[in-house]
Image (spheres, rainbow, N blue to C red):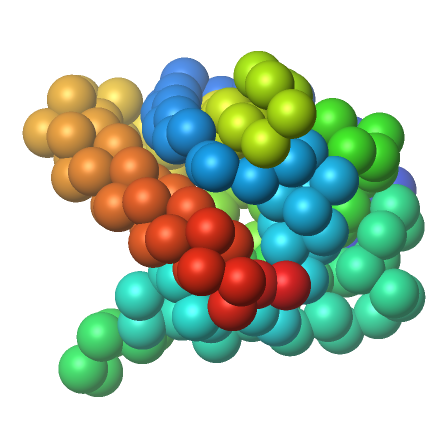
Length: 165
């Protein structure tokens, strides 16, 4: 048995799962500005619908614990993450290690020009429910991709308007 949130549990959760989803957006802003906005964890609440994000431990950088709670009506999903890599201004790596959401994720910034940056959000979730979860994933994937893409588009608008970070 592993200690939830402990080193063994984190190592297990860090292995890529079968539920893979990627979203991309171009932001008309320099990579440094975009990266700073991505590291403003609590501000994710401004661009991820129905979600409240907070830094539970640390300064939001490597080693920090982050919690995101998404609530729609009575349904609530708690996402616990550990920031495992910060390579400024290029990449933030996290490991989701909660009860339901588990697996590695990465946010990457690629400077395309003086004031244009591509952001790629990539997640590899462990699918709950064994075989049933694997069978359900093709039905859930389009909604996951759409949700991530819409969130990134909102993020880009806020950065371009100077509202983030």
